[in-house]
Image 1 (cartoon, rainbow, N blue to C red):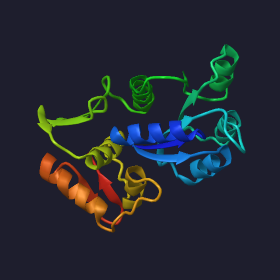
Image 2 (image 1 turned 180 degrees about the vertical axis):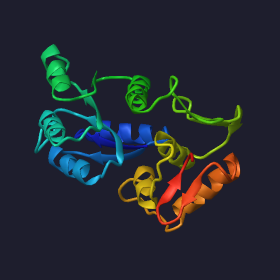
Image 3 (image 1 turned 90 degrees about the vertical axis):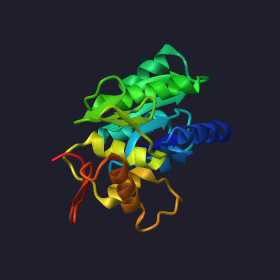
Image 4 (image 1 turned 135 degrees about the vertical axis):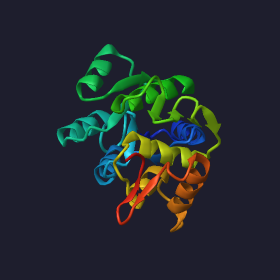
Length: 220
């Protein structure tokens, strides 16, 4: 899953980017509100979640949040800030934030809140997405088929999660690349095909279908 981190503190931004990447997320880190607005407007739905600081240069986090909500963008937003006053929490949630987390916080709590927000958009038990005999657990980042554990890489997990979020709907190669890779990462022309091929070997040839000229899909 691709995450937009909007944080101007270099140490916090670096720490969060590294921790989230280690958990298998693709992270784009931006340090000011104006650049974040451009990123969100041009992402074409690629971001599953925005982690938003409030005290940003050029455009405040609160103004950014109000702008994107007025524009009709429903991307999940988790405010992550040092502002702990009740008035600040109320203002953030009223502006359209889905959750509010006060610094300092534990990475475990951040991860739990992120998973809680991400699972609101699709029907699943706890952290598990199920489709037929296939189960993907976002909490433990594990996959099983017919109850048997399947060993997959972080990229393969992200690709499978993207497809399972919208079963029956084809994702194009470009949409998948946007979900799997951040800015500045070099993507070879056949990378998506390789990931799909590897998943089919591990999950079965029928797990992912190719819709010629459209993309890839899970489900009939």
